[in-house]
Image 1 (tube, rainbow, N blue to C red):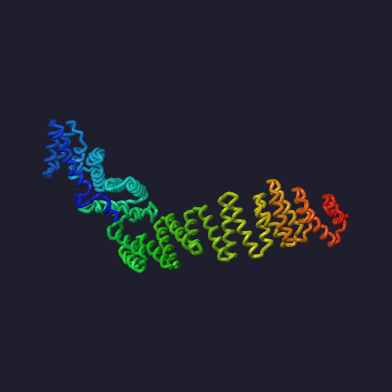
Image 2 (image 1 turned 90 degrees about the horizontal axis):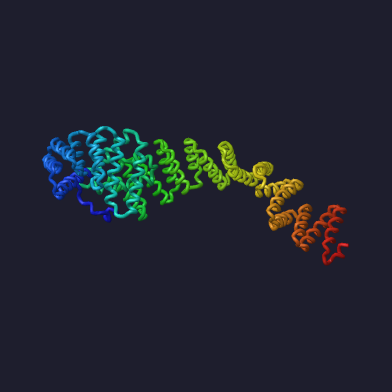
Length: 518
């Protein structure tokens, strides 16, 4: 594993970082005094302090260390040793002050932080104890890191853990301190720090950083190893073994959510989507029950990526977002759910859901574009259900909001034709063509008129307009072809006067066969 390529951890001082630093401070203080060769009063007191400390004479050692400092011996190790003596003497406040000075020396910093956390914990200042414990873990772990990248990742994890302390309550902090202090004792505490951080990293990925505190009680080797084993089984495709082991782990940690999420993932791998979604829903509900709505919502969003057509998931997520009054997200999810109904061809539910989204959109003052987007989807449904009059009202609403919405205008042209109201159809069409004329898009005007002439070949107004556009753009032959059809339609309808005007238009263009028209 990745412990192998970190520094050789071996057996460490069972007292933890503070014990390791004690040995270091004693050695470095002695070296400093002897190598500087100045056995002045400060140096003499320091050497006496080392002797007394080694003999367990804590009160006497503290006294002479104090005198060494008043005789201008300002070495960090003196402050550290004094702090350790003050801890032994239960002089918590002075111990913290001494450790603060000692922490300026990088080699002693982890031990000094550990010392301060012990003092704060005993004084029942659990928040400060927790912060100093996290600094201890960070310093130890960074000391073991093999590369700047690894160090960077570690720092990010510990930053999130520090941030989560502000949200934690007294009992959570007390439990966390007990767990971390226990972690930092015994001969293998260094290996444990690395394993713990990996579990924390997993928690940061799985949980909202605010709820990191809630997973601290589960930080132990058994759970870390167990999750690793489940992941190994999944990677090798051994889903039954993975599932059995995950269920076995649940017996000792029934409310540890990363295990439940693993089960959801295994169910998915076995293509049991329905059961996986039930599991994801359960996990999300537990987060909500713990007051972590945001994480609950994230789990459901994750599940929806896997099963986007699951209406139950959509409803759960919307309910959750409504609870936390995250209205823009609610709107986004309502549109998604309506889209899902539409894809499932459940047009009634789709329309009802879009209407709800529309009311919400108007209430929370979203940009006009969002409202238009919803209305277009409602219009599509009205057309699919052949409710043409309702579709007409929907598209008129869009045109009112955005005069230049070409899609709505085209829909209105088609709807009027379908309702046999050619006068209104042509009026809507003229409005659309004016938009394209404003943008100087003659090609688009020709394309639209041509499509409509093909669809409604007997509409004289369409032929007349297409002929005029062809004439303006210098396509004489095409213009004459349309006028020719138009004149025929007029004669068939008994509009002899109109037909005469049309024929004069053709003659005015001077076609090669002009005599045929005279």
